[in-house]
Length: 90
Length: 404
Image (cartoon, rainbow over all chains, first blue to last red):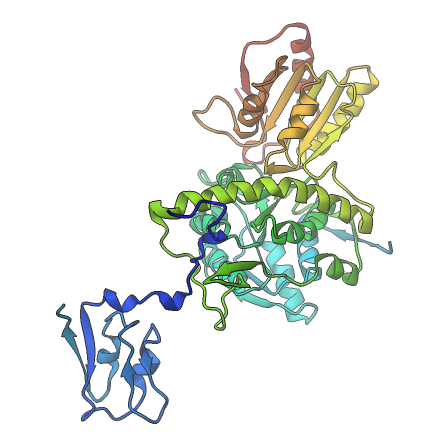
C-alpha cells in the first residue's frame, strides 16, 4: 500500500538516502581500465561528473559500477588512453 | 522602541530590511523597477555592512535556481525581480515552492510585455498566483520594509515552509521617497533569528531537511503519478496553515515596532457600518482610503478592504466583512483575458456564492501598464457603487481609465 499525503515527507524528498539509488543500472557502455597503461594520474577521478571513480591517490583508480552511468568522459579525458568503453551485455 | 526615521524609497526600504535579516545568500539580476534593490544590497556587501554571499547571476532563471540551491543547503536566501524577470523565472518559481524552500522574493510589480511597458500593474504576479507561493501585497514603502522582515518568519515557520513574494507597486512605491521608521539592527536580528532548518524523517532517521554529506538527501527527484499528487496536496495544506502564521507574525511584529496591518491578511478601513466596500490590492488602496474619508464626510457609508495576503486568500475575513455590505466594488490591476472578470473579482464572486444574501459585486479593471488611478477615478467608482445601492446592476466588469 503506497503512503498517503500525510505520511510522505514534504518537498518531494525521498524517504531513502540518495546513496540507495544505484544509477549504475542506466549505463549502456561501461568503462574498463587497462592497468598496464594507467599512469595513476587521477584525471578520471577529477573529471567524473558522478564521483563514481574511487581513487585514494596511491593505488590505481577503480570504477564504482553502482553509480557509473557510462557517460565516457573518463575514457575521453584519459591521457594514457587506458580506458575503453565496452558495451554492457546483460 | 527606539526607531530611526529615514527617507527611503520602496526599493531602498526592501534592501534595508534584507540587510537586517541575517540573510546568507542573495542571487539576483537587475530589472526595472527592481534595480535599486539589488544595487543597494550590492553596496551593503561592498561596504562590508552585511555578511552575505552575493551571487551576480546571468538571468532570473539562474537567480531563483541559485536561491533554491542555497536554501536547500540550509541558507536563508533572498532575491528580487519584476515582470519579465519573474516570467523568465516561472519554471523555477514552481520548483522553489514544491521543494518547500522558504525563500523570500521581493517583486516590484510591473506590466508584462508586450508591448513593452516598465510601469506598474499586477499582471506579473497574477501569472504566478497558483504557484503555491505566499503573496503579500504592500501599500507603501514602510509596509515593504516591515513585510520583508515578517516574510522570513512566515516562510520558515515549520507549519508553512513555503516561499513568500513581497509585492510592491512599481515606481508608485518602489521609486517614491517616504519617511520610513526602521528598527535597530539587533531587534530585527532577534525577531528573525538565524534560519532554522526543519526536520524530516528519512531512512528511519530524523534528519535536517537540507543537503549535507552526513545525511545525503535527494531534492527534486522524479515523482510521476505515484506521489506527485500527494506532494501537491501537502502544498495546499501548508499554504492554508500560513493564514494563522501571517496573523500571528503581524501581531508579534506589532509588539516590537508598534505597526501592524489589519489582521495581517486584510487591512479594513471604516468598514464597521459600511453599505459599500471597495476591495483591492497595493498602493491604490491608499488613494481609496482618502476618498472613503471624503465620501464618509458627506454621509455615504463606504469602507475599504485592502487584501494584503492574496495567497493564501483571506476567505474567513472577506466572508465576514462582505456578508454585511450591500454592494462590493473590486479593483483589479490586471486582466484575465477571456475570463468572466479579473483575478481578484473572480475570487470574490466565487467566495460569496455560498452566502444566503449576497451583495452585488462590480468589477473594475484599472491602472493597466501604470495608467494613473487619481482620486477622481476612485470617486467615479464609488458613485457607480452608490447608484448600485438604489438599483441592483446587471453583472458588470468595466475597464476604467482607458480611452474610448
